[in-house]
Length: 479
Image 1 (cartoon, rainbow, N blue to C red):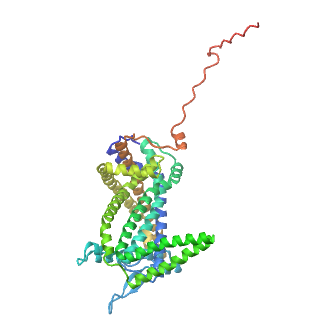
Image 2: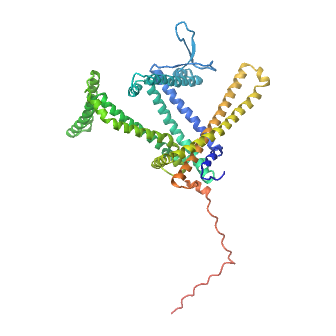
Image 3: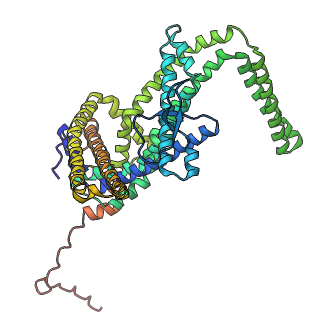
């Protein structure tokens, strides 16, 4: 491999680094595992929706190929029926149809996205209310909340998967870029497994911090919603804690104190629900307090915006910190924040170069993928196969579909390998620019150090004939 220069042109080395069977293998395994786990999550969500009596029907744009679960649903009185994808995943599972399960899951995702987009679009398009009113109305859209929840769960699954497979790819790329040497795949995989929590910990911690701050801002909204309930809830919780402690001390029994606390909590919840049902509230006071607290809410919103930018663009830098040095969570936070907000334009320039160069290189790979498929299809479909019966054509189509899936998987693995390799190069360049750390400085595990840095050979001992004779010391004379 060409030695790195420590300049932005080193980003152009990322494609050559991505042409590594080991990186492609790890990327392919990560893609398959991600598809399986996210598919299971979406299928479970579709089954829960079906259990609640909610189903989606997505119109078919083309005629179905194979045993897909379709439903005939008329559009109106006197209208001709149309074919629809049905989101009944549970029904497809009971029939034992794998293709039907996949199609129903796709219908569920499409229906959920379309319904949430339609509801959110209707709310945001309203001109008869303020921005505050439109934001408040979004909370009344149940499908929007469900889509956000499903997306968050899928993001967590993808984060856990690629914190291992992506870290292994970045570990291979880091050593290769810094030293021009390749370490073993087993070593990179072991390092990624050992530092797995340090890779997914920083972004997950930032995401939880954003959620906690958002819940704090939402707690301020409870003040304006019903100050009476909020005051009674706080006073009731304090009273329950004191009453449970007193009951435990007087009876010398922790079970009695626990019983008093649980019983009082049930009574408090019942009282609060009753007050909310009757509509009792303190007028105007909650709104005034919320207005006084609004600067803190704006400050919290600013912190959320900064942390969202940090999470979105600093995630590659966090992973690069862990994969290039034996760093922990706090090092990943500090370095990513420092590199991102100290050299934002340099970081953006490196990303633009990596994206443009990757588009050209990966476009060439896709052309090779399409050419490979057609070069195989044209000879296979010529001659006597054209006259074969329907069963033979179906069998051939099945195997060609598998071959097409493998080609798509290889191309996707190329994309993943290039992305992670380019992000490693970008991290090293930002580290050099910000800290002055040399490009060839990278952490090596003991097994990698022994292989890449063999011990110096022992100097051969001089021959006995050439060695000078030692003069024995004179023995002391006897007195």
